[in-house]
Length: 110
Image 1: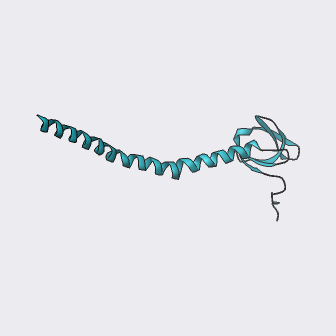
Image 2: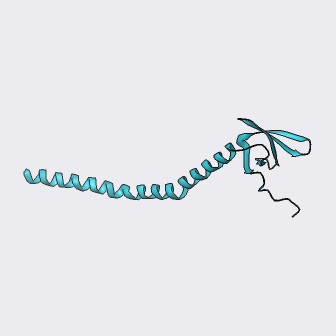
Image 3: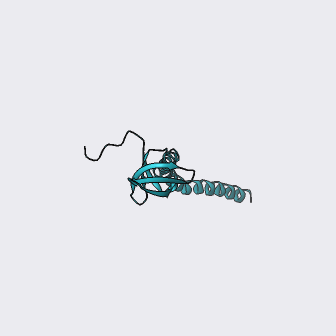
């Protein structure tokens, strides 16, 4: 009877070890996905949100539709963009895809 109990407890210990060994590849795969895919994407998204949040008047902006213009008026939710002389459009700030700070834009004919 005691040998039966000893062998049962030994089998239980092997089962727990076997479970840890079998779940280890899943944990390793998740860690690789996190450090190679999820974390860099979160950093990129955070940097983009900071860039959009820092839009100032006279910055050159690119909208989600591909319009390029100068930010004339900046609000919490909206940006008024001048896309040509006297032509202004109102864009939702979250739809901006890029912000080019003042003075760093290169003229098109150079």
